[in-house]
Amino acid sequence: MTTAIPISEERPAFRNLSGIDWALVLSALLLAAIGVATVHSASAEMPIDYLPRQALWVGLGILLMALAGAVNYRTLVDLALPIYLMGLGLLVLVLVAGRVGGGARSWLDVGGVGAQPGELAKLTTALFLARYLAGVNKRHLGVKELAVAALIVAAPMVLLALQPDLGSAAMFVPMVAGMVAVAGLRWRYVAIAALIVAAAGAGVWLFGMQDYQRQRVFTFLNPESDPLGAGYQVQQSKIAVGSGELAGKGYMQGTQSQLRFLPARHTDFIFAVLAEEWGFLGSIAVLGLYAILLINALRIGMRARERVAVLLVVGLVGLVAFHVLYNTAMVVGLVPITGIPLPFLSYGGSFTLLNFAIVGILVGVDVRRYVNA
Image (cartoon, rainbow, N blue to C red; front, side, top):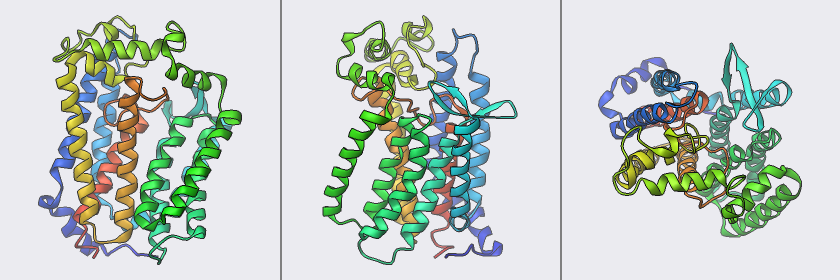
């Protein structure tokens, strides 16, 4: 087990602001600012303007980012097991006393504020999995190590699937895939894993999915079959994206959002609102910011000098990257609709705090690559 370095050694890393990857931080802040403005536009014609709430979450997220960067990531790794168990406990509590929202029992009310423990579970699982894989002193992972890694990830995935929130559960897959690949994975295990995933997918389809979730898949394959029912959301999203054309209709001038044709426009489909208002050029600019954020995050992993730091960075980057890829593909009808928000842009407290915490941890890993060596 690694131990946290003394406080006296901590100060140089935290005070050395020149060592911070400012491209990573500034890209996250710009995306959050764009998100606040777009949330305001998307909710302008709704009973509640979500601008003040999202601005508050972003402010709290910035404070959390600074705190996460100030805490030595080794301390988080040392506490990974109790943190992981806490995350599982909250997911169990959701099943017992949670509130239903969006078709899933995924919310806990804390002091009148709704929170989604599933977002916290993503981070706690990444910490614990990085700690476990870093302790495996082998060039390639064996069956035993892969089985343990699978169990670590399967526990929160099953609890999320029981809510049912299959979209959030699926987000664990790219995280664990990237981490075990970096830890050392033989190709024959990849083939076996593909067969297991296929069998598990068939089982989920037959026994784990509700009728409305199966309908989403059918609608994805043929959205025109029910344009006023299950296919309505993806049809309106594609209209919004396409009508933005090259330069968009202008801020708060989108017809699909302002006339309330587009559902979930301030959360899962916020990218469609942005594309309608700012067009292809605005969409490319936002995707460029995501590229800057992810590329610089990967560079942090390449610069890291500890195995556990590399694994942690890979897991967190995989988590953020897959959210971006899936959400943007979803709004143009390339993948089935699930409740996958867009990092830094979609409205939501738990998810916003998660993304800022991830950036803070990445910064903390980077500034301590020499201090912790």
